[in-house]
Structures are given as structure tokens and as C-alpha cells.
Picture 1 (tube, helix red, strand yellow):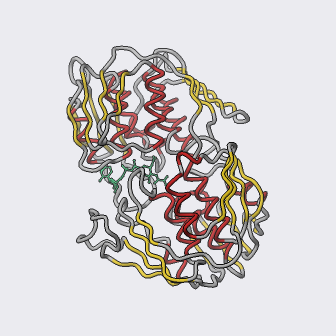
Picture 2: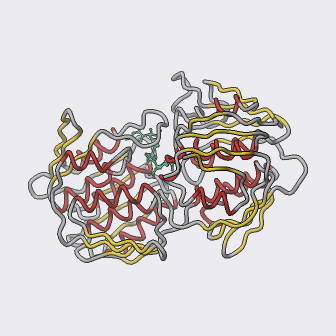
Picture 3: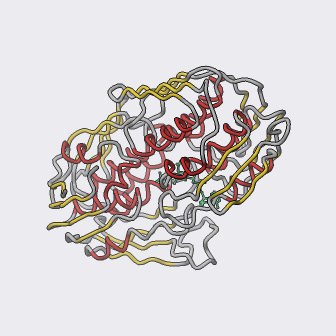
Length: 440
Ligand code: EPU
């Protein structure tokens, strides 16, 4: 796997990339397959590290998995689901947070589950308290061990519950959906997340036989059923990867057609991109994102849960904002600590000031807690190449964009983390004309 790139910046990225199924849906859809009494087939599955990790985790629990890499068809047969060793789960989970979402389906099928110490991207503390509370509300018995968290289903299985999330968390909403569909009785979820990936997961569960009603005001009602069958489903396209390539086109002064980018899941991004001065050509088969020439406009952006501007779009777009003429402001309201990647941008010549105050109208959870969660970006800055070790998935991709935008050479290490969520990104960069060498 590629771990370092020597990038020569200054060449606009131009050409076409193809985007497949969403990283933030596919692993959850794979977990849902565990609930079926018959095999499932998920289509449009990308070759990314997160898919490999979930594949090994479900295989450890007895699911037979077969991926056709060419077509992206992933077949999962859950007929022999069984208990796995804690040490094996730990060894295969890597730094993924997915094991927490296996809990509901495993409690239904084998009556127990184990979560090793979790990693995921290093953005804030990324706690799992909502998940544990949700599982306890369904009746799971949760025990903290030195190696992780062990869980057992109550006698008679999980029971439907009335749950209000303290925040519309994506993962906690998925936790409820995966636990409630086969729980005994009705579950009422308030303050749910309603991201397109969650709607796609609901569509999958409905295909399997679940009864799920999405009501107004972030309420979801799930009526438990005693059996679910397998599903056939095409995963929705990855709107975060699409937005990343869009930002790369703008920052480098390029022109990229993102095949399969979907307008309906990206409308908030598209509005912001247009206000920033980005060029767009929205087609049925994808979206062309390009720099139309002239100056980009400074902008105010606040990240939020769907239908707001996604936090995962923020980091790549900040790189493009360093190329806008004037002062841009970004208020990050989803994660308390998602601006660490800007240190490298400053070293490259960008002017980015971080602030603890909420620089935006939405009251957020971080305002009085000493987190630098607002950024003021003043451009236009000529970026210069530097040495960077990438911190996390989105920050890492943003550093690649910055290095491609900069004049001179950047040595970027730790890039393997990017393959967690960006399929074949090195090959894609090559096809877009990026000037770089893979450092062995
Ligand atoms: N939170 C808690 N306690 C919890 C769970 C979440 O306090 O038990 C907090 C988080 O710390 C955060 C907020 O709630 O401040 C929202 O987190 P959420 O649960 O919504 O995030 P997640 O499910 O862990 C998914 C994506 C993230 C994406 C977020 C927000 C996956 C695998 N990950 O994470 O994607 O940023 O939703 O949309 O679906 C990425 O793709 O780079 C990425 C980080």
C-alpha cells in the first residue's frame, strides 16, 4: 500500500473520476446483512480499507463474503453466524469504529457482542456514550472489561424502546435502526440523524422486511419484526468523495467530471460551491466541477447535520478557500477538533486563524468549552510545498490537495490512511494529471 508521495504542485487537475458506493453507507449495509435469514447482495461497493475491515469482522463471525472487485458486487451469506474471540475482533478491527455497529445484529443473532478499544479518525474524542446508552435502553447488559466492552442480550432478546438522542448522531441513529428492526415491540426514536446514507440504510432494512416510518421533526418509528430476509441493493454514491474531488478541481484551478456524483445528496454543497465561484455542470451521470477563471469569492460556511453543510466537506473546501480573494469564515459545529489539518496549510503559506468562539449563528456544543472550532481564512495565498504527515482521512486528502495547489515539492507521508475512504486515489490522481512520485 502506498505510504508516501512526493508531490510537485502547480498543475491543475483535469479529467474524469468515477465514484462508487458511499464509505459511510457500505459498512453499515454489510452489518445489516447479518440480520437476514438468507444471503444479501450489495452492489457498487468500493475497494477501500473500511470495507476490508468490515469484511474480516463479519467473516470472523461466520458470514461468508464474496466480493467481485470488478463489478463491486458483494455477496454475504449469514447462515452460519457464530461467536468470535475477543482477541481476534481486536486484531481485525484495526482503527475502525464499525465494531460498535455490529452489536445490535450480534445481540439478536448470537446473544453477545464485543467492542474492542475503538479508533477511527482522530477528530475530537469520538466517544461512544450514545451507542452504549441506546443498547442499554434495548435491554443489553453492558460490561466494561480492560480489553473493551462486552455485551449480552437479555433473556427474551432486545426490547423496543423510546429513545431521544442528545444530538442527531449518525452512528447512534444507525445503532437504533440495526437494533430495533428485530427487537420485540415498537421503538420510537427522537432527534434522529437523517443523512442520505441513513435513508439508504432504511431502504435496505425495508427490503429485508423491516417496518420503519420516518416522520417529520427527526422522528423515526420502528415496529419490530421476528424475521428479516436478505436484500439486493445498489449503494448510493459517495457524496463526500465527490465533494473532495470538486474541491480539488477548484483549489488547483482544474476541471474534473465526477462520474456518479449525485446532485440530490449534494445540494447544500453545490450551493456553497457556486457561491465560492466554482463552476458546475450538473448532468444525469455525474457533475463537472471546475474553476471558471478569475477570482474565487470569500464565504461564510457553518457545518451541521443533514441537510446542513456536512463536516466531511469542510476540510477539502478550506483548501479551496485559501485561494479565494478575501476573508472566509468556517464554523464547525459537528466535531470540536476538526481544524488540526490547517497547521500544515499555515506552514505552506495560508493565513488561517483558529478561534474558540462560535463564529456563526448556530449555537453549538463547543462554544464555551475551549475548543478551536471556528476558522478565519484570508486569501488569496500562494501555497509552498512542505513536508506533511497526514493526520486523518479528510485532513489527509486536504493535504494532498494543498500540495497539488502549492508551488514546489511536498513530501506527504502516512497517506495510507486516505485509502480507508478514497478508492484507488493514487490511480485517480495519476489519471487527472497530478505530478507526483510514489515513494517506496
Ligand atoms: N458523539 C458523541 N457520543 C457518541 C457518538 C457521537 O458525543 O456516542 C458526538 C461526536 O463526537 C460528534 C457528534 O456526536 O461530535 C456527531 O457524531 P456522529 O455519531 O454523527 O458521527 P459518526 O457516526 O461517528 C459518521 C461518519 C463520519 C461523519 C459523521 C457526521 C461513518 C463511518 N462516519 O460518524 O465520517 O463525519 O457521521 O456526519 O459513517 C468521515 O467520513 O471522514 C467521517 C468522519
